[in-house]
Length: 71
Image (cartoon, rainbow, N blue to C red; front, side):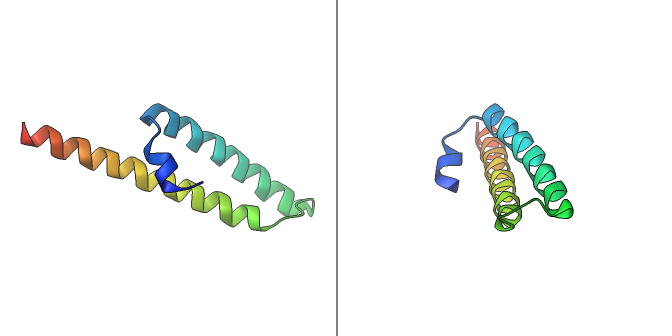
């Protein structure tokens, strides 16, 4: 998932996607511990996607604060 795609989404979509990815990450961790996870790169990919979402959310928050203080 690219940051450009995430910037086009609404705040509520980003929150929902973040929650979904957190659940997936938990599942990946459990499968990894029990030896059932075939593709261990999913752990890193999911963590990076969560970090991208956090970055986009903070950018949007800063942008809205900046535009609010100018008016």
